[in-house]
Length: 151
Image (cartoon, rainbow, N blue to C red; front, side, top):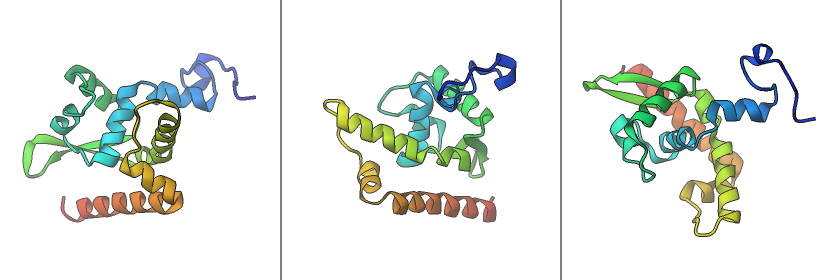
């Protein structure tokens, strides 16, 4: 059975112990998923870049979601060594693990929603899922290794 009842206190304050519920409580609004999308596929790294997203997120919502995503361990942030006023945001390994979720949401929308065109990452995912995930993880690892060598 998918729906597993649990007392709020017994499931880390969640309404149930259902894994879908737990995921939605963590990521259930569109803004969180769109921020993860932009960090993962658009290469955005700064608040300014994230605020320029096509969907037009309000700055107060963006600031709130960045805090929530960082508290959840989905993203990390650090001051830009080249400009201490700027913060650089990156996905964590936990955040990168959302790639298949976002790509399958894309598949659903392309299949069922009129006027939705498949983005390039989706085409690469459809062509070879294992390879594309390996490429994403490889790029993420290279970026993290480079960051560790050159703080």
